[in-house]
Image 1 (cartoon, rainbow, N blue to C red):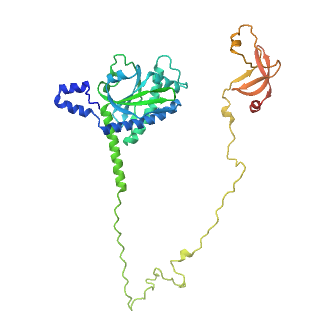
Image 2: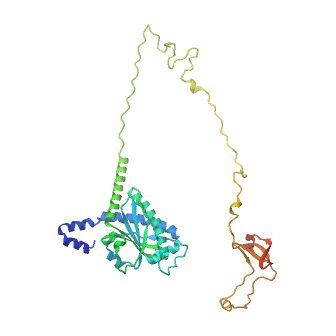
Image 3: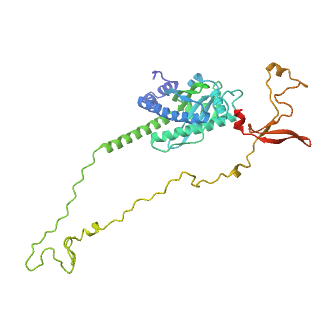
Length: 396
C-alpha cells in the first residue's frame, strides 16, 4: 500500500472519527489474502487461456497477475477508451460477481478468429454480433475457470451466462448500471495477454473486496482440511489388543470303567480316528486331500493370417446424396499483369490446349476423367471418353 487514503476513506474519518479507522482496516485485504487471491486468479486465468486457445487456434499466453486496489476514476483514467465490460455472476458455491475488462480491438480480433478469420478484420464498429461472440467465449473460458475454482474451494462452483457491454469511459458513465460494487473501492487484478502476434495488451478482473475475502477464506479452509487429513493419515494406527485365545478343553484322565481315549462313543467315530473297516494308515481327514484332481492343458484358438470376416462391408449408400462440384476445364494460360490490364471486348486469349484435344473433368478439384464438348439442344455438355486415375495424372 502507498499509505495514501482515498476520498471515501477521508470522508469516513471526517464523518465518524471513532469508527472510520476500523472501517478502513476492515476494507483492506491482508498480505496473505492478497497472495491467495492472486494465486486463485493465476490458476483460473491459466485454465481460461487453455480454453481460449481451443477457440481461436492461436497461442495464448497470460502473465502472472498483479493484485491492487482501484476505484472507478482509476479505471477511467488508466484504461483505453472504449472498452468491453463482461460481467460474470456466480450462482452456485459463491455469492457475488466480477468484471472482466477487454479492449475493443482485442474483442474484434478474438471474435474474428472464432468466426474463421485471420484476426485482421477489425474495421467497423463493434456490434451485437461481436458482443454475443465474446460472451460465448467468456462463458466457456470462465466456465473452465469455475471448474478449477471448485477444486480449490472443495465445493461446486457455477456461473450464469456472462453479459457483455461496450462502455465508452470518456463519457459520463453511471458505473452502478454495470455493477454496484464499482461505485466504491474494489480489487483490481491485472494480466498481460498475448494471442499469437495479433494481441499484446492488458486485461483486468475487478472483484468486490468482500467477494475476494470470501474466496480467500474458502481456500484457507480447504488447505486446513487437507493439512488435517494428511496429519491423520501420517499418525500411526493404534496397536490392536490381542484377541483372547479360546480356552482349551481339559482332557479328563481315562478311568478303568470308561473306554480308552480314541474309542468311539455313542456309535460315532471320534475326529482323527480311523473308521471301522479302514486301515490305520489312511487317516479320515486326509482322504479329501489325497483324491486326484483332473488337470487338463488350456486350449487356445489358432491365429489366422487371413481376414476373419468380422468386418462388415462398407455401406456406400450412406454417402450417395452428398453433393460434389463437377468442373470442366477447357484450358489454361499464364499472363502478366500488363497483359491482363489490356483485356477488353473482342480480345482473344489463347489457351494451352489444341483444338479437338480432350478436355479435363474435375470433381471437387480432383482430375477424374477426359471428355469432349457436345451441344445438347441449347446447352453445352461433356461426353466422357476416358476415366483417369488422379494419382497417375499428378505423377505425369
